[in-house]
Length: 620
Image (cartoon, rainbow, N blue to C red; front, top):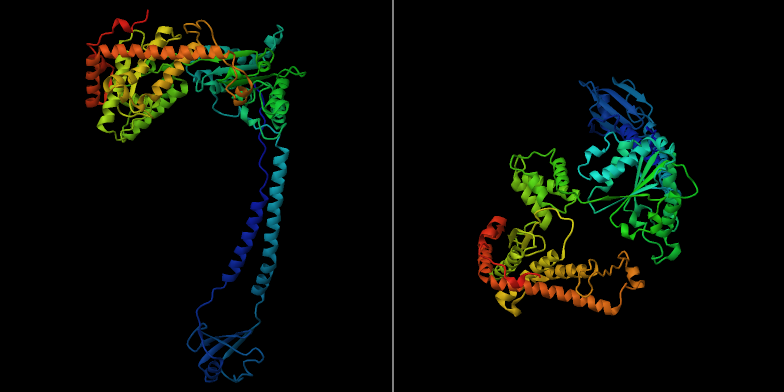
């Protein structure tokens, strides 16, 4: 269904610019008048000398204007000399003979220049003062308009665009697109559903990780339905003054209803849609007032408006239950991270207009980028083009793609960082410990690359990549991840002794503790606390944490700490058993890292060919 879109108003004339134009024009006119009659350079002589020469017949013409006398000597056709006579007497009274053979031409002095100058002295200040007052009035008017428009919606209207986003322009997200195609059909053929008594859904909530394409899908719905699309961020409703957000919500819905059928898209709705009752301001909190108005507009007394609200968030767990109930957001579309085939399709879209050579393997890159969002893949494609351009290449190669992938995934190489030989050796044993433990444990992902070149904020990196996309993680996989995370610290302790450990394992220990705590609290994978979950859903707000009690007792908290400590100790013990039984392989891998700095998967497998997994490191 085609809808007539509103035509934007033309901007009013700028009075300040017009005033400045007239002031500048007056100055230009004065300058033109001042230089309109250019003066030739004349020799100045005394009037007595001029009269004596005129009486002697040496001068043919005298031009007198006021007190100014221009002299044209004999043999010349134009004045060459200049003189000044007395103002109170004529040239004859000052000694010129009346029978002298000289032409005397007397003209009245022009008063135009003086008149213009006098007028300029009067007009220019008046114009400047008038311009100043106009400027002040304009500023006051702007402030007044701003005050009057404070409660107006700041939503941007899309739909006038010549190039629209369609579902075919978006790779992947097939299940989400199928859900949203129904919304498009509602907007295109509302009578078909009304004839059967079906109500058009009021709202659709798009939930997904950052970068998965929520906003792009919302624009595709508007493009497919060919209806006006009002886009606004949740944070744009909130101001320091109470009531402004609610006023903007009313204005936004009023605009959408005038242009119905239409779509309202609220990005990051969690900025105003969080659970009520947790704010410091109580019932008068501006955010809660705004949320209340959204609830009323979406399911109030007024019905029949053909307006659908799309909203996007990556924190659906913190939204108010009243916002999520049927009648407001009737549908919830989960936008998942792309699978392998979807990642390959997304990469093909981003490399469509980039020159690539035959070595580029997008399928292999799609296999390595499990867990990456569409935005991550777009960033990788852009980084690959930057890498190729930096080396003045005409096409992007697979090497450029690999470098871009590693830069995005684990950070850029810091080759300029100077490390002592001792630090290099410690780093080599640390990373070799990670790699050796991860290589031997049966439920660990295979080693992809090991390097002692500093990358991002780390001194070295051991990189594990899953062979395929997985949906679930079992307890054996979690424990192998913990063991390989502890492999770096344990390797330092075996090689340098208990007192030779360094701060290089700081991030590993934090990660291991986070994983162990998640296993106990969120996944119910403890020993004594098996199948019990202690999720604290307070949205992460500081005030919530201050006012809400945790959902378990102090005794349970102590038991959780003991379970976490037990998992970390178990992981450390397993790593120590693996590295102690394979000390020779540890030394070989560390020596190779010191010589080559970076080892890929094939090289690691060749070096660790003789490593054996001891039975003590297995889980039963």
